[in-house]
Each structure stands twice: as C-alpha cells, then as structure tokens.
Image 1 (cartoon, rainbow, N blue to C red):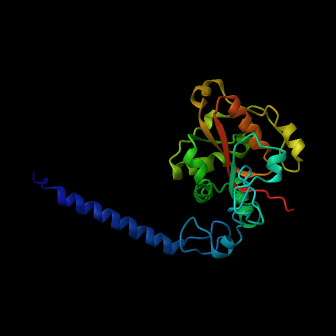
Image 2 (cartoon, rainbow, N blue to C red):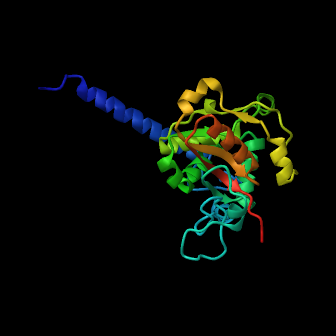
Image 3 (spheres, helix red, strand yellow):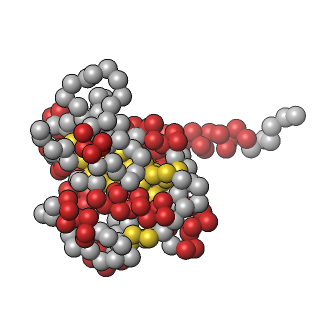
Length: 260
C-alpha cells in the first residue's frame, strides 16, 4: 500500500520543527548557560550540581542499618540493625535517604523548602529514586507527608508533595496524596527533643474514611524531605497502618545522622 502523497512533506515539516527546537535550545544555552542547582556556578548540564557541590554531599550507602537507614562506620559484611533500631523499633519497616543532612544536601533542602525553588524537586527526586530503588520495587503507592492546611496556605506548596511527584515520575509508581491527611495543627518541630516531637505529633495524621478502600492492603512508600528523629515518619506510618495499609517504608532526600 503506497503512502499518501503528502506524507513526505509532513515528515520534512516534523524534522524542521525538531531542528528549530534544537537550535532554540542551543541559543538559550548560550544566553542563559545552565548553572549548579546549589551554588549557581556554571555547569555542563541543566538541573545538575557542579563538582564542588557534588563533593559536598555525604551520600548514604551500604553499610547501613536495614531498618533506619543510618550509616555504619565499618562494614561487617552482612545486613545488620543498629542499636537504636533494636532498642526502639520504628513503626515503619525501612527508611532510606540519599544523603546526610549537612553541607550541600541541607542547602538544597532549604532552597526547595523556603526559597520556593520547586524546580529542584526534579533533581532531588531523581536521586531519591536511585537511593530508594529497592523500596520502590515493592511499593504499590507513594504518599507524601502532608502539611496542615494552615501551614500549606502560608507556604503555598508542600515540598514533600513535590518530591513525591518527582519520584513517581521517575519510578512509575503511582502517587496518591489523598491517602493521608494532617488533621492537627502542630508546633514546628525545629528545636524539639524526640520526646517532645512524639507528644507534638500525637493524633496529627489520619487516613480519611473515603480513602481507606484505596489504602487497604497497599504497600506504601512515605516520602518526606528530611528524616530527623523519625517521629513524623512514625506518626504518619501509624495512621496509614491503622487506615489499612499492609506496610510502610520511608524515603527522604536527607536524614540527620547523630555523631557517635
């Protein structure tokens, strides 16, 4: 069967459009060269880090605690639990994070969270997808840690939601932000001890009744920007499990690591 007479002009038109877009992109690259997402220094690729900022990230890699994801100083050659995970087991099954919360990692979180740099979620989400690959393989749904409506109104966006959407886009695992709600207005967690955080978060989260049918039996991956003491992750995980989730894992971009 012969092609329509106008098929060749259509293909030519598509090639011309692609060429024009490529030329436009190159021109923009000359006028506005890509810069480091942390320090604004020139980089070879958009949405990337310069060499110095990359070196300033302390990535969390094995060996680490299989429950809490906190790094070990020495590799003992087998999966292990940290003393903290044994003494005070978390509500969630496993937690993973890209990096320790210092240096470049803390700067990136701050810029996303407080400087309205929503475009950073794409790069951070890519790194989170890699760090949480084993969790994503087993997850049925991604749920961001929600903000209370008043804090969301003041901040205008939820950084955990932005990261969850980015991880979902990278992994193909569906994101459902309506499976968990923050129903109690809590104090800011900064400066609170672990015990104070636990009290502050009592009753803060709930799985809405209308969402429980979708939540029942699901393996949930809970996403947040930073893991500090784990109090928020525990409170949110407890609400998800009470709402019918089969299990909850946690994925964050950064986590606070206590020096021993």
